[in-house]
Image 1 (cartoon, one colour):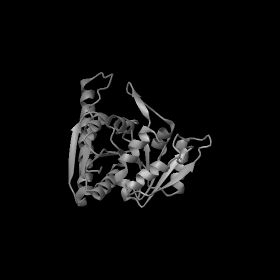
Image 2: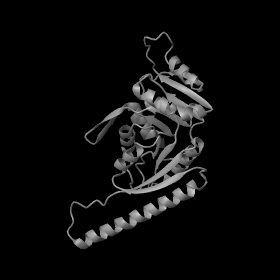
Image 3: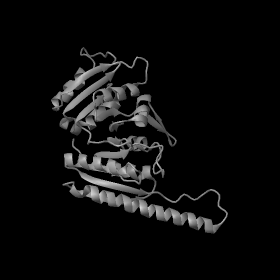
Image 4: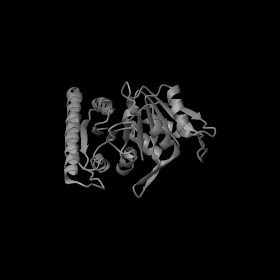
Length: 277
């Protein structure tokens, strides 16, 4: 597979410009068509209001903020994509952010989103936007830390492997990036011996090799600590610029339940994270 259509969320967050720069770099590297999507969320009517004048003022403020955010996002997109060397497209839609991104994301090969920033003002997304989009679209999703990154991801990549369905999907989805990487590490934490006669991880390393990816296999132990924390620690030790992993969880009625490693990395990531479900 290859990335021929990339969708990037363009909101009013302070980290949006950095996220867009990464999306442009990835699109340029893979010769992909880049779609920037800005979502204008609907006006939320207050539960209690005692005057039409107050309601009019609230709506006027909403309209002004929405127009300003959209104009700023569009300007950054046009400026950043000016030298992409390929095709790009700007879309501005109205609706709920997760629903709009999920609908558009189903027709993309890669979705680029920003990590939720609990200290960002104004609040432009929900805390579980990444999980909702990744799980509902089942498309690979590249998440950019809200602290920003200094270079495009994909030169020194770490793949978190545990033979699960989700990790299979993640490593397969990441193949275009892995093939172009300078170095790839296959990290297995507390690997379990299977019926195979091979050492854990050898078969996936061989599979990658047949695709032109020479990966270094590393076994590690969590030793009772949080697996997500171990992954972040090893990423720092090896100067990793991209982590690839399966995202675990399922949706209940408007509630996302994640596994421990997924939850830790999404909350505390320091480098970009490519996930698949």
